[in-house]
Length: 183
Image (tube, rainbow, N blue to C red; front, top):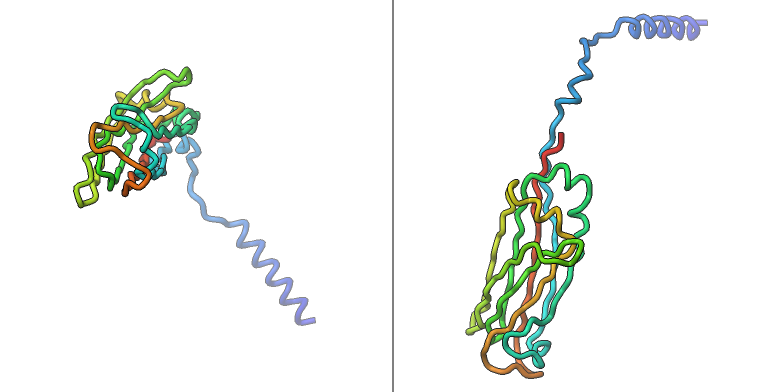
């Protein structure tokens, strides 16, 4: 019997408390004023090539191309909200030859829309490290939005011939940091 009375008291108290809730006037129009500014960093491409991979290539030839599909740049989120981007490239060289490292941005028709060239010095006993950051501001972010592929290639410069036993490697890594303004 006592349990029944306690249960009724608890039930009545709960119902009374639920009818007197505290809330302020809610302004659901605030959602229209919402903005977020996320920053996203991701890898674009990475590869490594050993000196013997360049044995047959002569000076001035574009060799070892790597093609990265970057269709993610053509999504509606990127199209509407991307306000700037930074592309970072890092190249390490331990091959006794100098190179020009080329990054070509291609549109949907495979036409180049931008080319970035990074000179890489020849190995001289100390690993050569070249780093480059390319900023795409709001004025030129359209270049990225129209890019569907990026071609990474190496142009070998004149120097000592490379053989199957030549030591060293060239290593490339790249990333993109994208800045968005979501409204």
